[in-house]
Length: 324
Image (cartoon, rainbow, N blue to C red):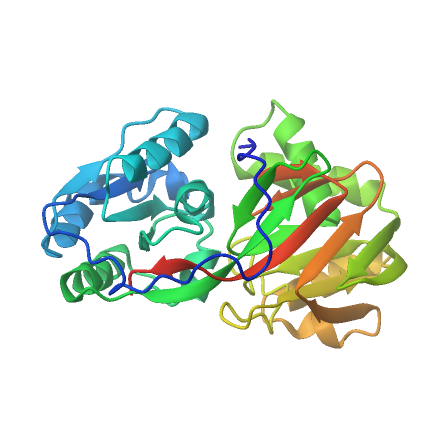
């Protein structure tokens, strides 16, 4: 999925952290639900009616948004807010979350996640239960009690000034290159396409020259992995930025340097527990604003196609309120 938000420039700190008590929602205002029936390869397809029943226990009408494409889904989320929705809930994986974030970011409308995807990285980093029904119960209780919790988001701005919001991690290295190849392939379908893309990119692996600017400090480096994390995880549990905190107002930047194929294959399993950061070729930084530039790379945020480099990523504190 790709697409541009309105090219509005928001300076760090200007998103107002609206509490639940600032604008209490009337009980008759609906909660809008964006559900992806194909998330998690469809394994939760039959669960949606029970999820909706659990959400209705929050005391608000529940309305499922109609959309056949990611573009339609994003438009539907914006329309739901314009129509006065008292909350938005994503039922799906990180891609579904990413779509809803484009609407709720920087607004007082609270947001909940029912994790039902292959990758649920933002949901788990944000503290939602892994079980979809348990997550729906948590969201319903938050609605009933008028409770929400502010967390940070990252805003990525391209060279044209348009921007996207993301909650988890922006990939701008080998993983982004693999995603881009997999998205161009028409065969095979399913996860094998990604596996073949990995093999193809491993065969032509080479460090790329990156220029990064971290809060005004310029760094030039040859690297294979570059990730900018608002959250810790991407790719379904890979803790690429293991020290990232959704409430610290900072981005975690992880750079994996001049890996050869053997080193990359060895270090990949260490990303799941986050121990890769102890490798001597891995360097970590923290910053409020990060610019990443390199030739011929398209970044991916929350697993979704985002923008060609160069991009500027900004941490926006308390940019969204979670129903939990």
